[in-house]
Length: 242
Length: 242
DNA sequence: TGTACATCAGTGAACGCGCGTTCACTGATGTAC
DNA sequence: TGTACATCAGTGAACGCGCGTTCACTGATGTAC
Image (cartoon, rainbow over all chains, first blue to last red; front, side):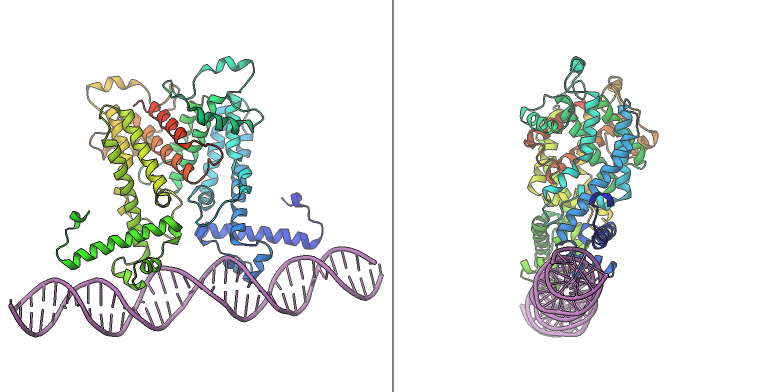
């Protein structure tokens, strides 16, 4: 982290350090009170500074919020990437389960950061486009697994006649296909086109499932959530024919 | 609505009316600023009252929030129930699609109410158990459709050997089964036990999909969201063998 | 039908709190010659 | 190596705002006899 910015003098090093500390304090506040409770004054208080001093580091509350959102996406992305990388390449089911489990574990450890990125949009806050690179880490990771199972081109193309999902399934509307094509084109080795929508569905289900657990929607319905989660993820893997 | 409380005198009628007006004003504020922006003072201002007068109707901000949450669940439930009831009973795919579409339409029309019930929990607010009856309307509706397709008992039991979901699928953990059994027992005519988890998954996917659309997670990924949504819901219907 | 009393809605002032952001300033740290 | 100047971090006071909740009160509406 430090090596990235490579600050020249002592002043720059201290500045980078304090910038990081401000975000850490912000994260702590987030954990305690949620995004509504994120307050520059409270951060300043915690750091033993006067409130206006924060403005030397972040020009406004929204900028800090953006930084924290990017941090959260990157933190989740790192956790998922590391877990996925530890699994043997050929074991695609294992890679998917490792990714999904890492995402869930990350969310359980930092529920408010999860809420920040996947919960209700913060009122009056418009997310700048800076966040998309970080937001896309895990979806791209998943798409990579699917692409390994169902590559888009080459001699194995013939094997891919199996339709995505269950035997009875619906043709994908053309308007959706083209959008997803454009998304896949961003990948070096994209999955075969008919697997794109199922991949997005898998990602939706993963996020939906974690949110349901975290936000308490299956309270008193599912007790052993870990078991139910794994069951779900295995079902999805089967659908994706990993 | 009026018939439910059946107020005796004129005073009681006015009180019921104003209570409703307060919630309507709250809903309007929610729509503009989200749950954070819900303010008793602002409601009082809008109604031309002094702020303390609101306390004659709701003893605290949290109580009002609870009332609005229940309203939202009930409003969504009414929309879904009406749409589902309009479809011929035998057309189970149609009933599912009508339900899912009604949920999405309701959400698009009232995004902040959606966020209130399915977004991040309001910080510092603990939902009382009063909300569960309303929260469960749509899930129960869906479970009813699945139950019609796959009833739990009777002579048709033999036809139900088809496993839920795709051909390759995972056994459900016993701990999850028992919890879902308990849930299904609340229904008069529950679905066969092996369809319970797929039903909850379908509900999760429905909510996840609408949230993704509303919260902007597929911005610049899926353009024709209506088409994608229908595609998804048809896939789910196939999985549920409706 | 009329009077006496109890209930209740709404008032207005106040308590105590927190927030984001701006601004002119001091003094220390870095930079150029 | 030493001095002069520019940069920058942090200060403290202030602006203007909003909030939930409490409390003693006034009057109007309802109820019991």
